[in-house]
Length: 382
Image (tube, rainbow, N blue to C red; front, top):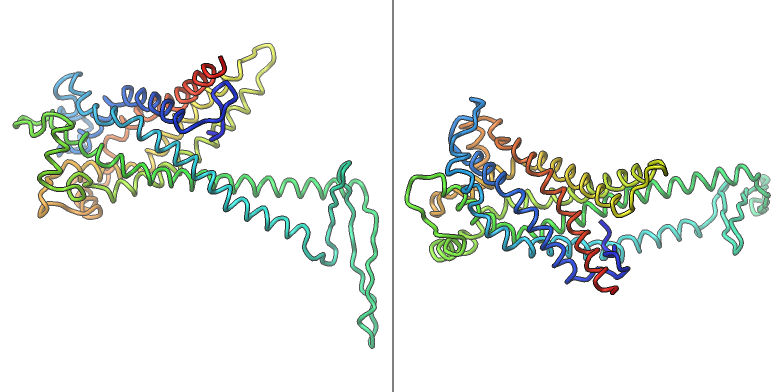
């Protein structure tokens, strides 16, 4: 994703554009993925034995309509969360360019224009092209005098000059690619860290409403607002509403770093493959971008979930356990209890439905986001 991409009218993306496009994309992803998310949470928090190979009845209890329980909080905050993610990522990339890339550029200039050593290759850039030549530092000395030194400037062979120039270009490209991976991962991780402070209380309320539909006991909360007010009133903001914040950071920070890095890599390669299609079967350029965005988003979302999933299992357990202070346990204690009581396999319980959910949810986010930006750009250009 380019932070300076336009929406079809050539104008630069603004914070308001991010809010609108991110909100629509986020809302679409919530509607598509929430039923799968409900089944996932119920599987994660169910005490039934997961080794039987059967899906616990609580996972689908209450009928199809109950699968949309708890959708209001994530749907209401979808615009905010996506705006935070895109805005944080864009701001981080700009800071990276100003600080890291600027410093790296200065170091490269110092290396190019620094002190010449023996056998070094000098590449001189003129107005009408590149002129390569080698300089060999020849020392002529004797037993009594070491000051007799001279530079012998030799015109290089054209083939050697071209080879040296190509080698230098390949080295710079490799270094640039590695630095871009590091940049995308770091900026994505920072975006994940920022939005974790918003997503933690939202998912806490969502999880409690989702499992509430499966219990036969009296319903504790009438809805998301009632749940939020009740939790803050009885247990406070940090120990109550922000229950599971630590494990949320462990999940969100590396997840978004990997998500953006994998997305950026796959999208670039898919676009290159699509652009190489035969001219007899042309595909519009915007279709290239949407197809690449959908495939890259789906793959990056599914692969990321596969890696960080155990943290999500622990988070679901923490955010659905009793809120009384003396009954609360830390992240590592909860994880150890799950493994001890149910085995390591339980840490991946619900992963199948999560991966099924992850692909369409993440495949729809970027195409919808880019489509909305394009429509905004077209509207402005009228």
